[in-house]
Length: 131
Image (cartoon, rainbow, N blue to C red; front, side):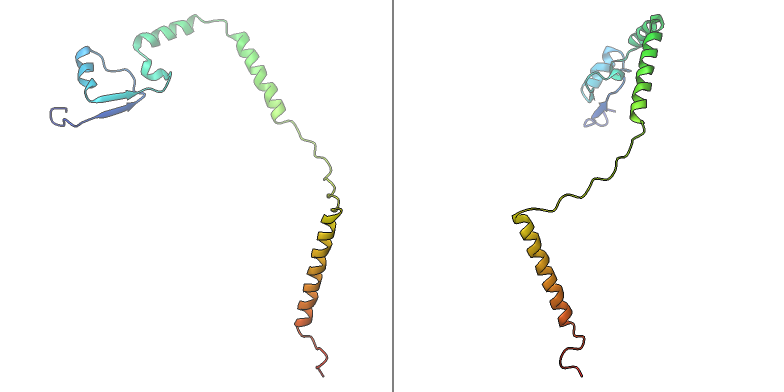
């Protein structure tokens, strides 16, 4: 495609290593970039590395005690996560404010009472002139 589309570029994200051969790799170097995130295993996996991994896993037999310890840890954690919760009595309301704060609350309540009385009186309801 490069002879027909010289501006062709390819960006790969975690692409597996499937291209082989120096000639092919040299031609891809001019038009492609492969981005690998830290220790991502897929781009680094080759037939040889996967085969070695399978051989090592097949030879590993000391896993039953680790599995039992891990499973017991999971069970212990699950028991504490879903433990029943005992609800306590509701908290009593906070005490009324004291000192200057109490005076401010009383003044605000008095103003509200005066405003309510003024609104009730302005609403009409048969004042002195009714008759």
